[in-house]
Length: 212
Ligand SMILES: N[C@@H](CCC(=O)N[C@@H](CS)C(=O)NCC(=O)O)C(=O)O
Image 1: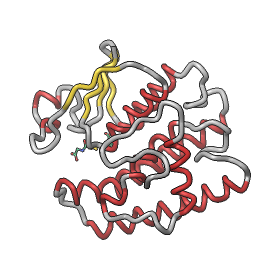
Image 2: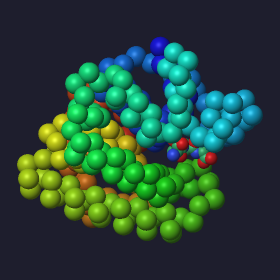
Image 3: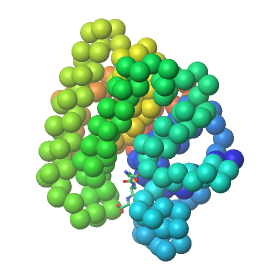
C-alpha cells in the first residue's frame, strides 16, 4: 500500500490526500512531526528526502518526493481514465504542465504566507502576500474566461486535472495567510466546484462546499 509521509496541516500533503481520495486509492498516512518537532529536517528523514520537505510517498518501495511530481505519478498510475493527467492529449498535457508550474508560485506565495502566520516561518510576508494576489488575479481572470466558454477547470478540458488539485489548497487556505479572496469571484466559484467533486475530502481550515 502507498505510504504518504504526511502532516495534517500541510497544504502540500493535502494535495496528495485529495487526489488519492478523488481516485479512491487506499493509502497509509505516516505522520511526520513537522511542527514543532522539525522531523522533516532530521538525518533520518533526509535519508527519505534529502531536501527535507514533505510530502513524500513510498509506493511499494518506489520513493518519490515533490508535491507536484507526486500528483503526476499518482494520476498517471492510478487513474485508468487518463483524465486527471491527460497524457493522451498533448495540448491538455501542456496546459497541465504550465499550471503545475504556476502552482509552485502559489505554494511559494500564498502557502508561504500561511507558514509565516501559523508556524512563524521567516519569510517576507509583504512579498508573499503581494505575490499571491498577483497570481490570484491572473487565475481569477483565467477562470472567468473559462466560464464564458462553458468550462469549469483550470485546463481547457471538460474534466478537472491535477493542475486544479495542485493549486486548490494554496488558494482555499489563503485567508490563513492573510490573503483575502474577496476580490476574486471566479476563483471562489472554482473552489466550490472542486469541493463538489465526488470523493472530495477536507482538511482543517477547508470547509464543505458553500461555506467559505
Ligand atoms: N516543492 C516542495 C513543496 C512542498 C513544501 O513546501 N512542503 C513544505 C510543507 S507544506 C515543507 O516541507 N517545507 C519544509 C521547509 O520549509 O524546509 C516539495 O518538495 O514538495
